[in-house]
Image 1 (cartoon, rainbow, N blue to C red):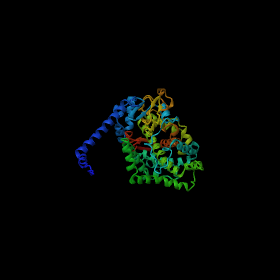
Image 2 (image 1 turned 135 degrees about the horizontal axis):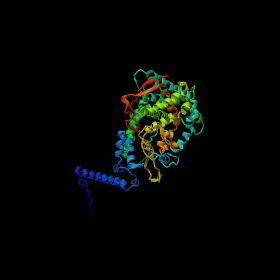
Image 3 (image 1 turned 90 degrees about the horizontal axis):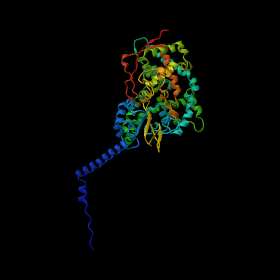
Image 4 (image 1 turned 30 degrees about the horizontal axis):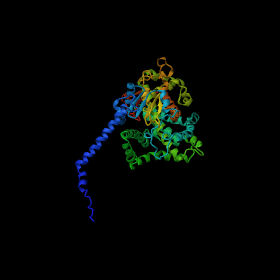
Length: 510
């Protein structure tokens, strides 16, 4: 019987492994990938479900223009320009729509209809993997917000008035040391130091000693630096899903980054833990929160940690930003605005002791100035992204397909002539019924966002802004230094990349 001879494939194998052939095959696959990608991009741009929305062709074809703007800190300004050219709804990327439609957009995108949900790629879990208010799903958010809302109710904040006045008085004292000396003062730093010290006392029953030291603490410096870093990382993640996965796996979860996150996290965690072990002499935010968290459904310790870290960022920097933007516009606009506000404050208050939460809430011109300040220089100038759920949603009268990223753009909305006449001018009278601005859409302004997930600390922010600005203008006359004349010429990495706001202060004449 004949014996079968094994088939010799070595020659075929060697032929397939020739470098020239490997290169040819690789280039063929690459060409197919490029052709398929280009074909898909062209189809999405001209025939896809978002093709009917206006915007530059290049942005419909590719993410890269948007990525470039995000990485350079120019995305917000670019969005505002695109809305001026293309209208209230603009396609800013192949799968993204930006809205500047005013009240209708706020209601549909952020309102109680829940037509969209938070984009999970934008909102990462906290360091301890336990969701706080910002990143929680709807059910968890509703439970937490119900428990936390008591701490930010006006009744509670009224009880905290002595604490707010104490830190406001400390700021006044520190400014008084510099007033009249000819030295320039960075008002941004003083606003930030005050709001961080206030929130530290409210959250931990201990300030951060920033006003006392006149400098940002290392922890706060890390917060400011990380805001820009995170914004740039998000921009890179838009490049591709693979790159997004790689960044999350090999950078964000790397030992070096995790160690840095741990240091930041432990700063607030340790202070929360110390606060939980004692009962402070005067009530703070946790007094009400812990009172409402007894029993089933209450906040866990991990949830307290997550939300404390959130409060220390969201409840500080944005308030200081609003105050700084308002101060800048008061000092660079028609002098009559500053004069009128100063007269309102000084005619109703003689001394610091006269200033109360109730007294400053009655200052109608102050309220108008702050609203206009936040319109001109919104604390959060960008759109906070939402994602359209499975099956799509009707937004602003148009069907938007599932998985589309949408957002109401603050800066673009507030600079839209459809909503505000003379949008680039600081005009507080538009909030006081001036006939010139009778057609303004005042409900387009939502600096604290809108709907069930709007800013929980809105009441606290208003109290702080009124207290601090009233105190400054009651006791000091301000003049903007030359180096801050172009202060608003800033890049935006989710938040404004602010420069020092240098002013000269002189004591107000009695």
